[in-house]
Length: 261
Ligand code: ADP
Ligand code: MG
Image (cartoon, rainbow, N blue to C red; front, side, top):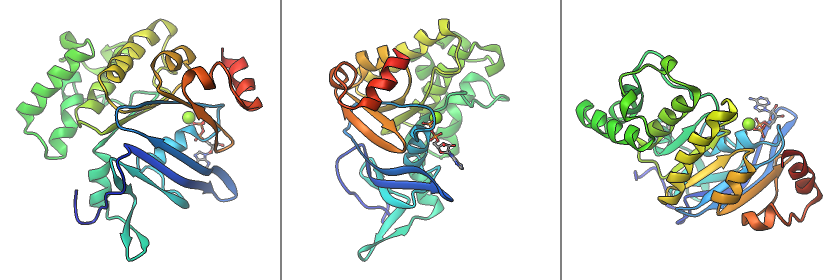
């Protein structure tokens, strides 16, 4: 917490009336979303519905034209100035981003670093840990994702499923308040999907706050506290998996589910 930031509430993630556009192209059209600490939210929706953009707004990679986001009780991208909201400094944005984990479809590991150093890099770069401590933490986390024996390998020597598990360990190394996953298994061969979903499920059951964009309906049914269906830059419906997946209220949700199930 710095004086530049402001506690807004106890939600892990709060998205309020967020609009995002590129020129005339409206990508998010008034998104409202609240994620409570420890909750697992799965976001479903057709390609182009704005799922990645929503995650990128939550992680400060994109700025909304209207609305605001708070993560871990701090407003993202703005600070209160009188009764107006002002832009945050780059320093505060970086500090906030370092408390949000992000796992990408294509892993995005550092190719020139070993698995161990991929995981240890951020806590050192942010000044939170000295290198030996960061490496010890990295060893622990790599054990947790089942890769204790691959710490000295380089990313190219690993399967896609192993690389994605390294990426998850890397996200955990920042001890984030929330981890965002953008289609974490979409780039994997089908036989490697299960090992990555098992690691995410392990995080879910240990109380980590997760927001997961995925087309894995079985995973959503089993692991999500809440399923959110997006279409056209809006949340069309949301609720417990048994409601949204088995008794969708909206035609667009039914149509989408009939295609992916
Ligand atoms: P999803 O992840 O649900 O497939 P995205 O959030 O990636 O959807 O994209 C939503 C829409 O926004 C798409 O039509 C996409 O082409 C558009 N879009 C995303 N990023 C940009 C950008 N940087 N510039 C212009 N249009 C973009
Ligand atoms: Mg996407």
